[in-house]
Image 1 (cartoon, helix red, strand yellow):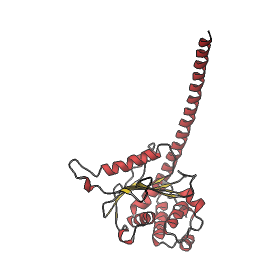
Image 2: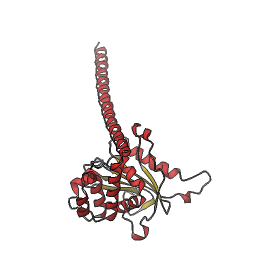
Image 3: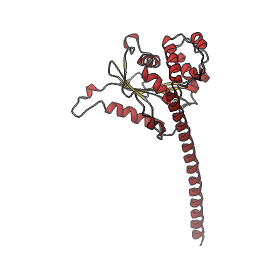
Image 4: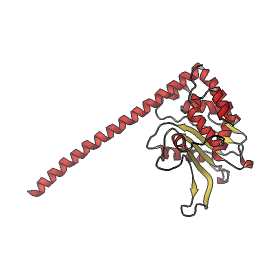
Length: 265
């Protein structure tokens, strides 16, 4: 059998979880850990498809936009590349999701919460001893004082999970994070022995079928190449910026020397 595709490829992640809302709802529930009466039982995908030509565009985000039965809005994505504007881009996306709910003349009361859930293939906050971060609008001195529940954001660092969560078995969220990290390496026997969550077994079956589809494999490879090209482009831009900075520094130094010479005359 061919090797399995990895869910850490954002195209594979979106294809896998947007095709089966049952496994997506379980993943979201494991991240949010809501009380039983607020668990998501039904979720609708708002942007299910990916056009092949989109896969090679620079900096395109292959996220999953979803809505639950209470009309809460979700932005769920696998983010595998690091770039400086990630926090601003994330804030912009979630803000747009909130604003787009409201048409001219509507009452603000109709606005529903927006929730971001991002799985990172790198450590955004590597200096901190955690892998799951939850941001919301609270007072800095009195965190129990919540301004509103309408805006929250979860970051889950997959490498951080690997380093810090050794005893992961039978913990609902940990099982999902281990699956995202290692599903492409697992065999059927390991799946049966390691995972207790039946939804993860269902996700593994779906990943197997996805991996057998030649068209899906080609699209995943196209996306992987595009992501590598982005990384190379960003590295090149950083090198270019450093070189330009050095040249500007040299020029400023030459100007300063000339000014000093003039002042000595």
